[in-house]
Length: 173
Ligand code: 5GP
Image (tube, rainbow, N blue to C red; front, side, top):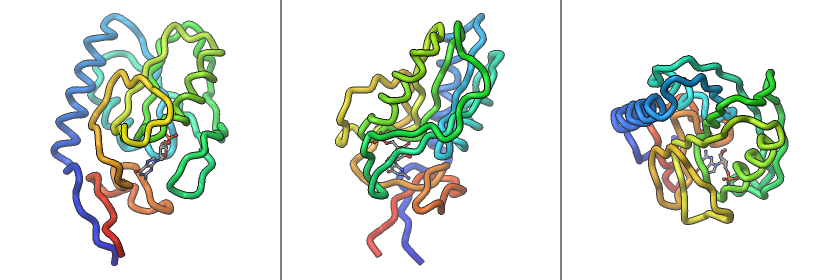
């Protein structure tokens, strides 16, 4: 069995997600928002964050595939599952698990802008600034992490570990 070390435990994640939800609730008071979780990695974060937002929200998922050699992103992105409704005139918050090179979010934001939303912001649980290739503004950020490959709380390694309740790092095997 591979050894997994804890990077961010479940209590720390829950506390931060609560703060992020409270901030979003404050920033969008009196408005309706559309949450757009990016599948698959953000499904756990999105489920928790949505329940910490005390506003009327709609949720529409978006599936993206980023081509690369397993752990590296190439910036070539394909929408594998699109939104089910137009976002024209809507206040959208994209929910992402991790911004690494930033190429995936750059592509997605360019794509969403062509649909003329009233606004688009980004909530990301994690950010790895050491590997940034483009500058992405993260409006609501959970944690900044070092350049390590993380798993758990929605994030996978070869489709495994998404159900781990904390964020961990796979130790050398
Ligand atoms: P970017 O385009 O910003 O380089 O890549 C973002 C995507 O790469 C994330 O949505 C995620 O799917 C994947 N990714 C980047 N870093 C990690 C990591 O440390 N662990 C896992 N499981 N996926 C990662």
